[in-house]
Image (tube, rainbow, N blue to C red; front, side, top):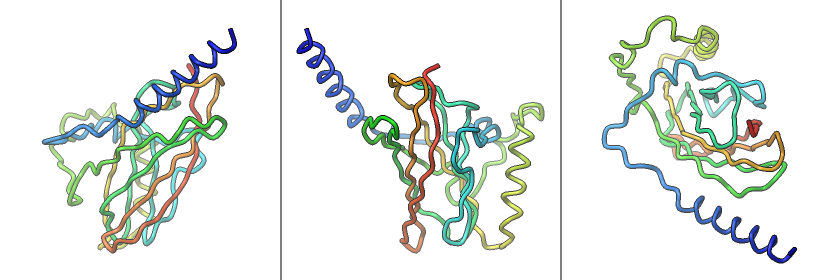
Length: 195
């Protein structure tokens, strides 16, 4: 009986590895930004860091949920302000209290060329704007006063797996590449729950 249980676990692990490596970002001809998600993105309680220094600027790491629940998709929003501009952000997450492999993050810039399309904001009603987040954004923007500072927004859809523990800690690794071709790697942790 024990052999069959081990075999079933091995098959399940192999299938999970195949599914994770088969993931690829979807092609987007005209990417559309979910402005509502950007407006309600926030730092969550179980997050080790909300903001950190990077090169000549700062990055905010925000989430579109109050609490991360396993097997429920959410967005991670990265707000960068500083010099030099970023050309790309890549990353992955991995389980801390249970290693479940490296889950790639497909991070895309939402407003290329640092231009926010204001017509996307026309349909956002005032009562839909998260006041706490606007305060955080205001404080974040006031910390960097340079007129030449780049303001960039990156976003990734994230889905974490479920494990046997009620609470799972995840380590998120982010690598930022500047126009000067310098790379900076940062790490933070977040917690997810089975329900």
